[in-house]
Image (cartoon, rainbow, N blue to C red; front, side):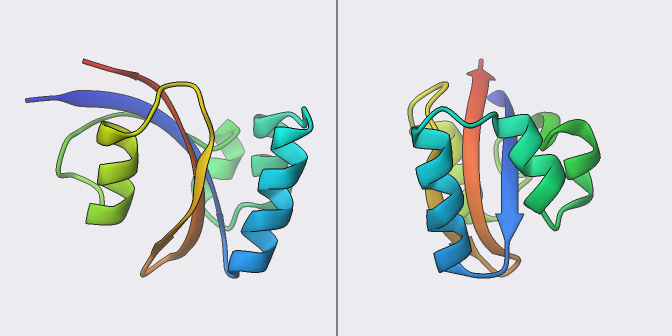
Length: 92
């Protein structure tokens, strides 16, 4: 079963996600933004979700992690939880 490690920032609005994405594109620290803005409990770990199996996350999130580029922030990705900015650290 494919596995991956990713971190994310979860916010309520697409506009907020886009503003954070712009900051990340300009060199902001992902972990610090996650700690400050993310509504997910993972914010305590700089947005890290640790390692998980393909199919454990909601489909849009799973697709971004397992089909998208490594070490590049993707998003905003909309799910039932809100809007995510996702960085896949590794997959195997």
